[in-house]
Image (cartoon, rainbow, N blue to C red; front, side):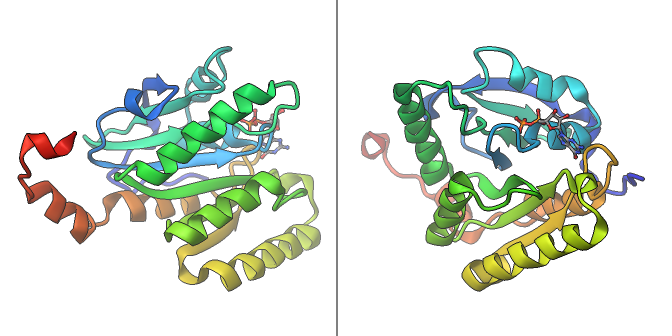
Length: 225
Ligand code: GDP
């Protein structure tokens, strides 16, 4: 069952725009949470379930948009969820992969309003190469990470719990309090409240101090170039 006590009404999320590079992203103000994952991990289904809106993820799956960063506005001005391109289609040419990695990297490194990353992994196949890369990046930058071990309905309770504990232990050793891990099932709608609570925490928190200072800092226009 999904309860809705949050001021964020995820069901009202609406497609804003797609970007193939940083300069095309919405203005870097407000706060956003990005969803990442290997292709087929279940990222679109997780976003669908979070927003109870199957049209949203379809937007990201539209041919031509799968390699783009897709932005969705929430009902509170300036708050967004972001669907990062799925990684790992074997058929994607190398040059495209390089383009993708370059722009994902730029987004992750430079986006000031990014508050946290939700990394979606198939509970049966966690911590693949791409996941390692994202975890490393969070470790290096101190970006908060929430791991969704999805398709939990595909495992019996025991193996599912054991996968959760294993991934949690591994990641806690590396990221400490900056990481949280949960089971999820889009099919059964399990874990939605926990996911929403984590995103609420990130998006509704006070703006970090350094950003507030930056906002008040009136540097001359010439220095911005
Ligand atoms: P994406 O490429 O990461 O966006 O993955 P999708 O959300 O398109 O999911 C890939 C496949 O896994 C689809 O066939 C989904 O129906 C299936 N899937 C996604 N989430 C779940 C889940 O929680 N349980 C089950 N049983 N199947 C799922």
